[in-house]
Amino acid sequence: MNTTTTIPVHRTTESRLTGLDINNLPFGKVPADHLFIARYSGGEWREARIEPFHKLTLSPFSLCFHYGQTVFEGMKAFRMENGSISIFRLQKHHERFNRSLERMGMPDIPYELFREGMRQLIELDSQWVPSGKDTSLYIRPFVIATEEKLGVKISDEYLFLIVCTPVGAYYARPLRVKVETEFIRAADGGTGFAKCGGNYGGAFLPTQRAVADGFDQVLWTDAQNREFIEESGTMNIMFLIDNILITPALSATILDGVTRDSILQLARARGIKIQERKVSIRELESALQSGTRAEAFGAGTAAVVAPIESITIGAETYGCYVEEDAVMFSFKRELQALRTGKADDTWGWNEVIPV
Image 1 (spheres, rainbow, N blue to C red):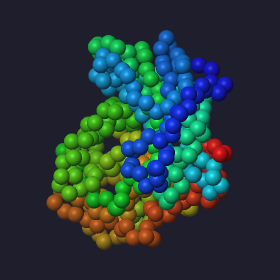
Image 2 (image 1 turned 120 degrees about the horizontal axis):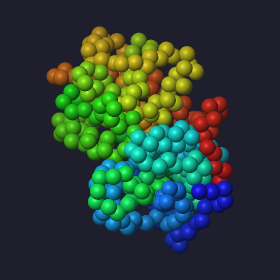
Image 3 (image 1 turned 180 degrees about the horizontal axis):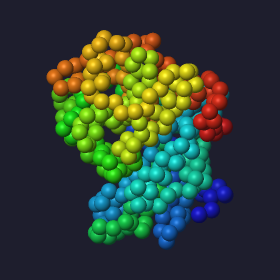
Image 4 (image 1 turned 120 degrees about the vertical axis):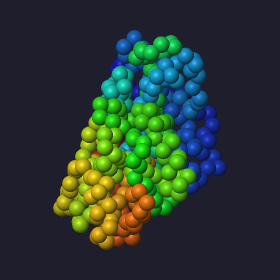
């Protein structure tokens, strides 16, 4: 599909911004005025366009409802100091999106289509990008299988959409988590590294049970022995122990988080020692028992940095360091400064839209 020309736009006749305080909205509830949509059939993406936000009409036979061919990304755009808009690490997100699509047997998205569709959509809805503290425009690209057939097969038809919503902080306070040793999130050879719907659906029940027990999230462990920490809820997990930043190494069961990667690069630039390796429950418990200052936090697009105040392992609960001078908060501040133009983007991470 050729996207070198401007994507056709059908503008809304009445913006829903009127009367909204976009700096104070519930996370993920209020859509921006427009969406991007393209259709895949006959082996190519076609009919790319931007339309007023609307509901989809799909046949109940559409394969996305039955066999799990649904893949998404989570990204953010930020209001910069000079009024422009920055889309954070667009290329990195595109690369991960296509890795997820490949794993699910779905057609990849050409970079030009991904970039231009997103840029033109956000430029059109630029007034939806908030400027308040800890606010951003959350961007959700996704692909669903739409071929109408009740048969177990890879679909021949798809929809690719991009929708947006203004958001604030994902978590209002530090988290209380438990180490999960009964249920697993992913296994070797599976889809743990992909952002597909099934990975999240399978995590709901154990998370729901943890919440009922007074926790906010779980720390997932490996499928083979329930011995090693893998992720924190829907985020990558990071620890700062003895001035060493420790995080599980990427594998087939761990998502290649963009925030994770960004924090690791910032830490290396500061000279912080980094270890990407397996982290056992026993090692974690020993560090927490020792009284050593230990920071633990989730890293993800939605939450950015989610501090963990306590970790429960079996019957024991251990506190983590969450004071204002914690190193994890300095990573969050540095990322925010880069995204909003308060600091030079020496990394080339911002896709800037002048407005």
